[in-house]
Image 1 (cartoon, rainbow, N blue to C red):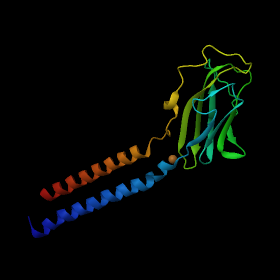
Image 2: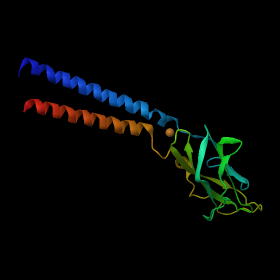
Image 3: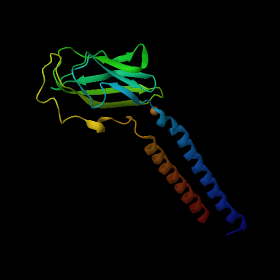
Image 4: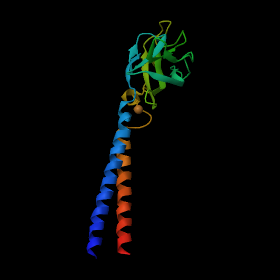
Length: 192
Ligand SMILES: [Cu+2]
C-alpha cells in the first residue's frame, strides 16, 4: 500500500460519514412537520360519550384550520345505516371545526363517526369513534343501547400518514445502508 493510498481510505470514510450525517439531518428537518399535523382538541359528542338523546350535529374541532375532504364526516346509526345529512363541511365561522348535521327521529343506541381532513401541512388525517345515545329522539330507550362494537380508545386514531418517528427511523436505516454500500464500493475499488 502506498503512502498516498493509505490516506485515501480515511478520507473516503470521512466523506461517507459526512454524507450519512447530512442525510440524517435532511431527514430530521424534512420530518419535522410530521410532528405538527392537526389533531382533535374537541368533539361533540365526545369520543365514547354517552349522551341522553341523539344530537342534531356532530362537531369536531382541531388545533388548527383543516380542509374538509370528500365525505369529511360520516355518521352511522345503531343499525349501521348512514344518519348524517351528507352536508359535512368546515364551519364557516371556525375553519378549525368540521360539522355535520344528523337526521331527526334517531333511535337510542351506539353511533359511529368516521372523519377525515387535510391538515394545514397537507397531511391527511382521519379517525373514527363512537358515542351512545341513551334514548332515541322520541325518548324511547333501547335494550342494546350499550353496544360492545364501540371502537373505544383504540378508535382515536393516529394520523393516516403514520408516525414521524417511524419515518425518521426508516430514512435513518436507509441512510446507513447507502453509507455502508458506498464504503464497500470504495474499499473494493482500492483493493482491485
Ligand atoms: Cu403533518
